[in-house]
Length: 342
Image 1 (cartoon, helix red, strand yellow):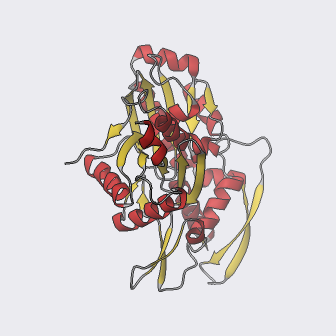
Image 2: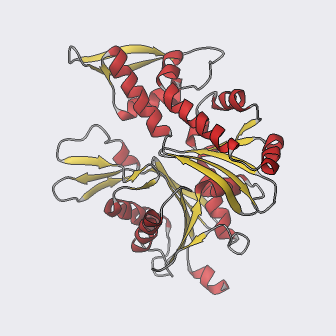
Image 3: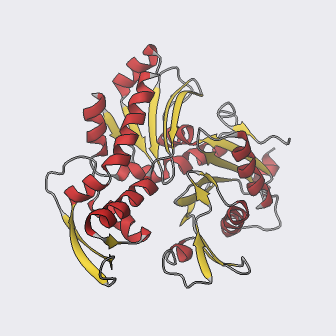
């Protein structure tokens, strides 16, 4: 076994709707790139992958399109996902002549058998020797360093780009999970829609994301801020600048935020009473990029009367969990879904 480990580069992948993070066993996180691929429409030839492709979103000439192959946390475009994965794997696997890597990939907990097979096949076609799937909330809990094998209940709310995963974990298993396909992307869409409806201003996806990051909040801020945005006036058809306050942004994203809060409430209602009392002591732990939305912890605290903690570096919790599983496969064999050949 030892020699095999020396001869292969095992990697963990957090294949996200918005970003893909990759870690290598023994090295840590080596890659964090947007899950975007730019292709030539006619020939389907890949022109750019990752950050370079994301810069093209909404700016490409007619013959080039920037595709996000992951939709709601699952593969929407199989062929493009494969290209994305094999590019990222090539970038991080140093020795080409060694054995193919063993890969641990995180997947949404509500994923179907068909979607599992799609993830596994694309990873194998991209050059994996063996593929293990790890449910995202479990990966996040392991990444934070929580004892997932203990009988004490842990509640994780992992808000990514495409899905929000709410799970209660105990004894190496997910006791109950709610997976809603409302997350960071829906917040961006809500901002675009709000400006279009109320101010006849059309903005792009990247601008909406910037507004969300710089002025977005889920709870009134102590000091409200404003941000200047540029877009196109839908009535006059010319570029226009306007000021947007953080209160307006909060109003714009209130619907998706309410949906996430409601999903957390429903998950709590379905939690067995013994575990509910553990959550009362330990609180709800927020992970994923969505955990960075200001005031989300306060909002959840207000709605549930439970302590809410934002994990350290919430963006990397899931990939750190994949890495921890690679380091200690024996310990975590109960939590991974082995790839089966059907």
